[in-house]
Amino acid sequence: MAELATIARPYAEALFKASSSDLAGAAGWVDRLASIAGNAQLLQFAENPKVSADQVIEVMTGVAGTDLPEAARNFLRAVVENGRLAALPEIARQFRSLKNAQSGSSDAQVFSAFPIGGEELAAVTQTLESRFGRKLNVSVELEPALIGGIRVVVGDEVLDTSVKARLEQMKVALKA
Image (cartoon, rainbow, N blue to C red):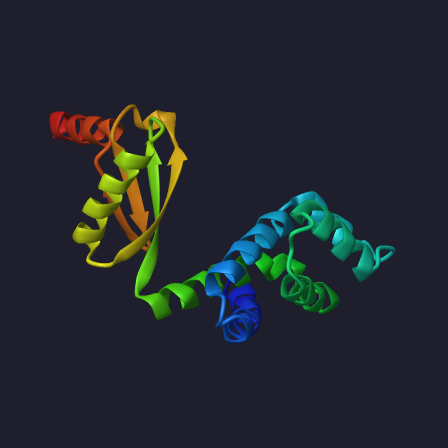
């Protein structure tokens, strides 16, 4: 995917510079557009030579909702007209990286067997921030296969305190 990353970089950097006054807002709508652009049927629709760029933009803005700012619509138009819709998820990822680098934070994905409430999430976030030594933007995803506990992914670091991981460690120890 190096080619896709290379294609996405100038778009992410341009978006970062253009939206420097409202990075959080831009991150919200670029993530929303990226999730829409990740749909295989939409990409197939966009690649159809009989479909115009305006039609693709109309479908995407219709799915994204009416609260999409003008800057988002202009950015989407540039991406679609240049045939880079497939790169939009990578553009969003690189944009988040630039935003996080500026603020000194990182994205953290927490996988949990059970839903985590507001107070619990705040406590987990505080513990993880002290463990990783930086501000974290935490998102939670349910993964019942963990049985209990959590698994945290921050960049290329993984902290696995799940029951499933402990059972796997015991299994390996017993086989040795």
